[in-house]
Every structure is written in structure tokens, then in C-alpha cells.
Image 1: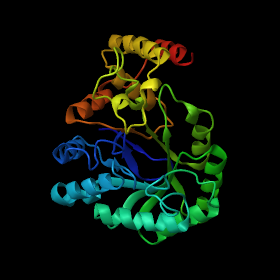
Image 2 (image 1 turned 45 degrees about the vertical axis):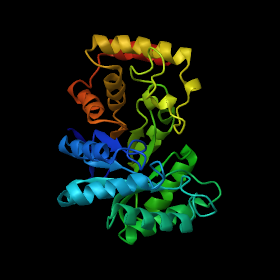
Image 3 (image 1 turned 135 degrees about the horizontal axis):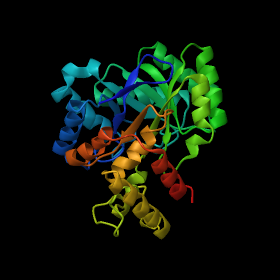
Length: 318
């Protein structure tokens, strides 16, 4: 495994991190959950990315991770970077969503209890909440660090102007933002527009999630929609209508480039992200140990020729 320093900090993150948005919850096979987490750690993945509402049902991914940690990896806590988040919808009612002090402080306490941890290495504001003053959300993150409930602070999915405001507030209080997390892949490139430059200005690392566009940048949908795919799940974010003719055609052409490189489309898609110096780590979501190993194959070939990059750029810019 290769590691990179996160922003201007002394903290190193693995190039590949394990995300537990799906396939690690209460509806999933716990034996498989345990295998994936332990195998990831054995392969050098030290960063495990959670959130209070990951499951389904919400909270169950943290419960399962805590169980694996206590039963199998307890002696390796200091060799792991464990992150969680609050701010997205967790539960019904006025206190299950948003960035208020009430929600954020209660959420981290609940997440610590579910995981059995004394602290998180990184704790995020999961999204910008326009209903809460940004000063309030940032102050609770500052207090979370000062109370020892987290070592570092991150934010996720913030508009660029609000991200800069957050960075300024955190820096002034001597609790600088460690990392910004957002969706980034060959089909969704919005962070390139302004966030990369902003992060560089403030010394903030960047962690990419949804690097394979929930499977669209793999060979899974090249010949239709498999029954066990995310697009076929009723509870998933990827819908059948998202698998358009245009995207499938683009994926087929990208797959041809990957084949010439001796890679799968998934491996090339991850390599393309890691080729950007602005990216500290890429979060992968997997459903099996085999899929995890396939994704880790990217580390064997993560460089591109100028000709390959130009060919890819022409395809994904259309």
C-alpha cells in the first residue's frame, strides 16, 4: 500500500480507503462484513470511513465495525484511521438531521458508543446545512477536538464559498481543517472547478468518494443491468434510469482503453483519480473480498502516458 500526507498535516492516509456506505449494515451478512474489514487491514488499508447514517438501517455500519474492531482488531486501534460523520439524515424529527450543536454533539456521542471507540481520528460535517449558521457548526467541530472526541476535523460536500468560510473559522481557532471529502470520478468532476485550488490554498487534503460512479465506471453495466447490481436495488441511490445509453457507450470506449493497459475499467478509473496530485486518498465501496482485491490491483499500474490521458479526456469531456 502507498500512503500520502493529508494536506499540510503530518497524517498519512492510504491511497485506497475502505468506505462503509453500503454492504456493511444490518441487512448484510456479518461474516462477509468481517472478512472485508479484516482483509482490507491485512492489505494495508488503514483508513476506514463511516458515518452515523451508514447501513442500512442507519447506525448499523458503525455497530458492525465496532463489533469487528473489538473481536478481531482491538490490538491494532493505533494503526488505524477511523472516521465518521454527522449532518445527513439519520432519524426523523428535528434532531436527526443538520449541523446544529445539538445534532452534531449528540451524533458523535452516539457514534462513539456504537463503535466502542474513545475517539475518532477524523470527524466530518457531512454536508453544509443552510439552516444553521456556519459558525455554530464549526464551533462544535472545534469543541469536539478540544474535548478529545476527535483528533482531526473534515468537511464534506460544501459549496466552495462555504468551504472557504469554514476553513477560515477553523484556522482562526487553531483547529485547521484536515480534509475535504466529495464525490469525484471521470463522470463527475465538479471538485476540479474550484475545490482543488481552494484546498491547496488552505493546505487541506482531498478524499474522493464514489470513484466508480456506483458501478457505472466498471464492466458491470456494459451489457445490461445485473440482478444483484446497485441499479437493481430498491434502496440504492443508483437508479435504472441512471444507466443511460450515452453513459454505457462512454463506459465501453473507456473499457477499451483499459484493456489496452491490461486493466479492468474499475482499475483504470481509480488510477485516473489517483493520477491527480490533489487527491490524497480514494474511498472504495465493495461487496466482497474479491472485489476489494480487484480494486487494489490499481496500485500495480496507476500511471498514464500523455496519449492515454488525452484519449480519456476527449471521451469524458463529451
